[in-house]
Length: 532
Image (tube, rainbow, N blue to C red):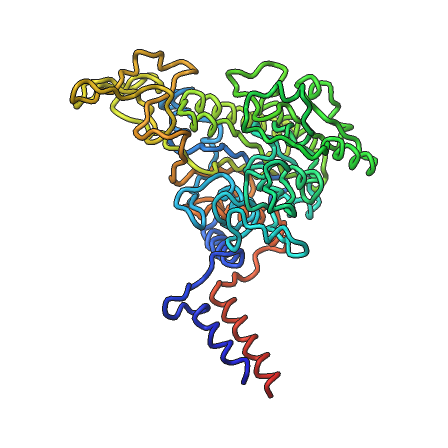
């Protein structure tokens, strides 16, 4: 029985005997867990007769860093305490647990991969399960380069038109999680990929050259610098040294144009608002819009030459809605998190408001086209920030104003503070043996340039580990009703739209331990067969 000793060695891995790991939270684990969550949700039942109806269209809005406190503060900022944002009026609300496989507090790469694939992964990795770690290059070697499938892949296989819009770079973590597989989210262009990872394709190339990226009908956002090789003139225009610079001589925009021309498809490459306004969406099949070298400007600095998130979303819907089989769109408000990283709460609230305007415009268009009842709308976040709402400010007080005065140091403090984050100001000064906190009212706390005080200073903002809310309306929206794993989003959306692993509905959920036992039994049977 030559195989049985091997089988005996495998038993601890399956059943967790001794100090061996009980399981690895890999793709198999999370897919099984997602199915069990979905089965439980289906047993709860829905309202308004939505249980039996499936979604022809799906629109997912991601507010980057839009934790619960950001939503609350934006609501008060724009509508007062009794008001509501557009997406807060959605009939179904749940919570998502945002931790990743290896971290209690997630980053955007691991969080959005979980949402778009149904599989939780390690921090700073995109599209690869927990067997892959940061800077792991084994996945780059053909033919073993196999990543996780996403909602975009499943939608395309179902014949739906797909696309995404973002005011971040289109190679940033959230959009990249729709189409890329990489062990480092920073590998956005070739210059960012280290020499020892020569076989690893950068994120920009994956978007243009591989599926599902090359099949997107709509791609709009920032990050042009990762797609076009640098020229001296271009470099002079860039002040942000963090922008990825393409150095291999490739022009991926030209490659995208050649690909669409070879298929005799109608296409438009857009660089400004005028390009969008002049475009005939009825006769255009493919759109690539790159409106800035790096991150698109925040709303308070955006001029009319750069389209808003609302305008990009509207244009994307006009292109995608021509599909008879429905469509899938992801819209990301990326600058919410960018503002939080700078401890600039007002800008974060302004950017959240911009996301809400895009949601409102979407609902208006879907009503106009009489397809609102066929569309599942999901609004959520990848992770929270460390923004807090403090003190006992009077009702009606500006959320950006002063909450009160500390009874310890007798210095005023603002309603909005950050537990940890970046601060360009000297918050504390020493006077003899005493440490004095700066009075924030020496600045205009309502201005766009004001940075909140922080409890612990860091070079950049830090994410929060809070659960984030998920708001839904439309077919199968009731499947989001309690506290879910973040990876549940992909399972529920795929089931609602009858695509991917749920194109034929929900098969009997297979638990992880059952699967491992089945594999173990199969191995033993093979051993017995060959030994006898």
